[in-house]
Image 1 (cartoon, helix red, strand yellow):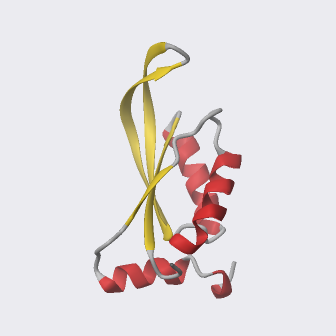
Image 2 (tube, helix red, strand yellow):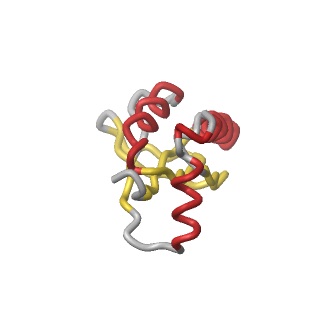
Amino acid sequence: MGDETVLAFSTFPDADTARRVAREIVELRLAACGNILPQIHSIYRWQGKIESNDEALAIFKLSASRYLEFENRLRSLHPYDVPEIVSCQVDRGLPEYLRWVAENCDQESGA
């Protein structure tokens, strides 16, 4: 599991919040990269009502071995009561890129 790569997705109320959280996650080496899509529109059910809001989406690339730490930290930094934190395993990718992700999530490399 150590060298496997995960993509994790999380929505935020705005791009500034997403950037601040992504920067901290990357600085802690919990993810190698966080991409911010500054504006998406979400329609969802919350507390029995249909809601509709503009949000920002962050896509994180990280090592599967650090996922639990990543999820715990992201949850602690996130402003939502129940943040979207979903992930999927990467089953293929450019080997050099996947190696870069693993190297940049390595705790031994300088966290």
